[in-house]
Image 1 (tube, rainbow, N blue to C red):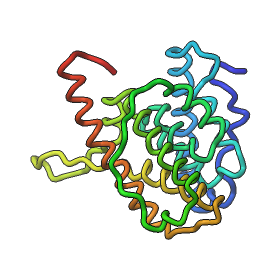
Image 2: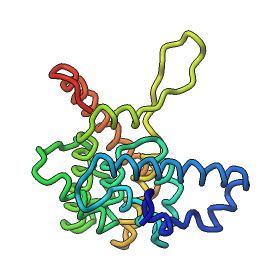
Image 3: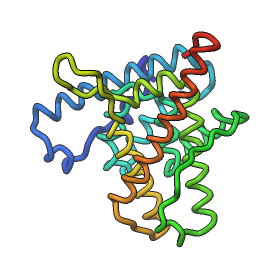
Length: 228
């Protein structure tokens, strides 16, 4: 294993993805992705003594052929400094290794439910599938609250505004898209194919609610003392 991890597992986008961007754009995308994953690996190695490594799980997830369509989304989320716990929680719905790790990581944490109404079209899902989706959303919330300030800062991006105008922030569209694609892939395994726009709107609501909870948690953290 090298100092930066098992990057031989990290094969990059498939040809179909490469065709969607110019050679220069592709090289720049790969450069940013490799740099972000290297930094993630190094940070995790410094901060964790457990046998697992969150960055390695993400890299292994990206190396699997069935996750090719998520490569650019995951790499861009990594580049946005989204906490690795939160990335793992998002991909855990369809990745058994990430699901096992996030369950271990969040074991014993207090419940942090998000108040998001389910999609009406999901009513036809089995009780087991509904429960898995509910637990997934709960895991996303718990993972984000592991580092509320960092999660909030990485989820909200400052928009370009006119000089002198008040700062305006918007939710990370890449993380919303990643959540929607992961949910789509999960539902496809259940022979369920709702309109992607509805899935996107649902995940938008999930993360908007999460931001509200994180803002409250960050304020409480600020009141009681410094933390991550």
